[in-house]
Image: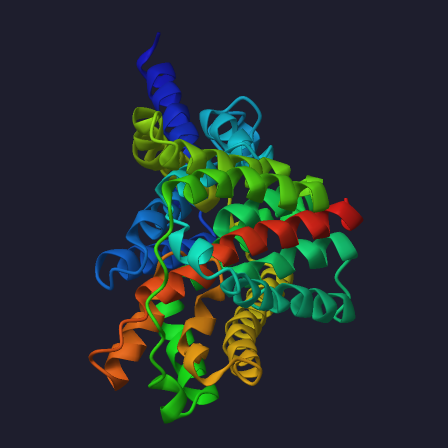
Length: 388
């Protein structure tokens, strides 16, 4: 090869290399999304907002928004068939990851507070008004019914449920819905306290609830079995989520599968959380994420979360009107009806202690909190039943 031919060959290679670099393929949208990913990492690392979720999602956003030539056939993008990221993303798109997360949630959740005081299930149910309220508003704004249902589930503050339902009803909106749901879950300590203060009086915040009764081991074993039969006979479409939730709880409570319960609640949940968070983050490619629909989804999701939090608090206030004096509920536990376990319950407890350092509400708040997990899955099943 002559010296001139060699120089032309090298120049052509350099030009090809430059054409494939992120610098050459970058647009302003990529930098916007990279900034969003950085913001998520900042919230998780510096502010300690749900780091187990926001670190994988935030870094996933960085991965998904590295610019590259989509027409080069490199098979590296999350939406390119046969790429590694695309294979991992199948767990989100096909709805594999959420039931596995629910298995882990069941294995690490103590339903004692709910078993001891079953009426707290009503508080968890009341908080689901946010889902159906947002559904009506989304329809009024022109979203298709299936899209409206997928968006509305954000009000349950349950990331896995939001991913499961959106994968069935509106796969094209799943990235925005998932990021919105997890964002509001992480911002529970910021969003909920002002709502709780606004809707309660000082005297209501000082209500002390009686200690819950003791719950026997037999009751704990029977609960997941009866819970599965009651909920899934009514809403069979929620079976993938509720089936795994109650199965995980039975592993925890039956006393003979301790190793399986530990695996489900620790190693398995951690692995699936990593894969779920990273692939959900990577699915927010600028071309798919930066749309007018995304702004609407975040706005509707925020509204749904506000309605859900307020509905729980207001329902407790209404419920207290028919409860005898010694059995009234502290309305501060109403916010815990959303499915952000256990953060919402901690917010109830922290706010109660702020007004009375001796008023511990955590165990009482865990009742509606775990009821909210069941309620959001049931709501998802209802939406799936008449929209799929």
